[in-house]
Length: 247
Length: 183
Image 1: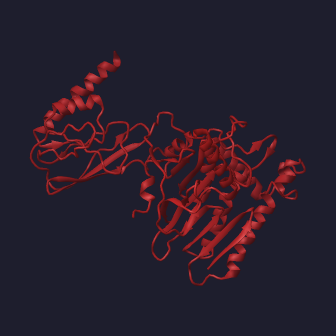
Image 2: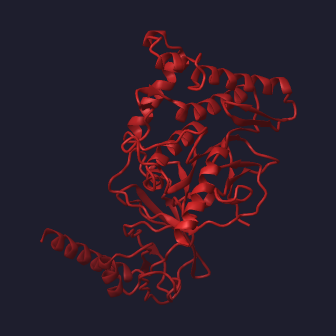
């Protein structure tokens, strides 16, 4: 049972392998992503985050989800030496964390529903659960120079994989310490983590560090990373290779 | 001056240690030898070094507890950097686990498997994924990262992670710009 829909400006795919899964259950997951978009999209004037940015809401009026996400953003900023920064030109944009967080929430809902073997993929950020036909899920890392080609194939189970690129939905990730200097050296940074929330937020922060980002991932326990630079060279962490499918 | 004193003490201690254990047919495994330990091991008669295949070496030398094995012919791969194996005889078959050693950014422990008198494999029991639990940048850590030219891997996949469509355009533009810059 697999469905793809365009939500939050990107294709979101949910596949459940357990045989009893129905379309209605998948609908519930897509509805959830829709509700996240309604609340957190900086592109929607009616969203809660837009209202906050227009000064229409006081902190005590924030929703529980908004408080949670803003607290997680603050925590992530602290854990990344300030490289994860949602305030830019006086506005808050937590989208660098919301996507991974929402995928994580969706995966948790699927697990709570009793599903064991599935994945949730939102614009290339992925949480996998269980296995496919008894084998780990296979995740390809797209070649940023030739998008029909993969440069690595990973075998993962019950983990998250996120890739930060040079532009997401038209907005650049930027280095908060040098916001006017475009990040051009690194084309993509893929992070494997214990779950998609963790993988995504650290991928975003590490991407903002430029080349040093891969060293940052190396210092994190339970994370591995694969960085592709503008010279078509890859740099990867010391434990990365154990996830690569051997042919 | 203090550094030299410490270095001399370490070398001295290692020499005594090596000598004592050479009498009991021991071997020490070091993923990588620094100058200091290389000096020490070349003076020893029962030490071999093994660079574990497919496993990055730490920047800090790691000596394991000498394993109970007879002296043996050199079993270190010829390509092992700074290999100074001078042992003779054969190792005793078995699996030997070294001490947990502090490598500054985390703890390292290796396990060697000896089969038919030869070191069949050396693997890390701890390292590198038991790196410091800290999720902060460790300024001491200068881990060795691996680099390669990207190339296609054709294996079938279930899902794809990668730059989103909007960035592909950016990349194509950049690629084009770079090609102009090099022509």
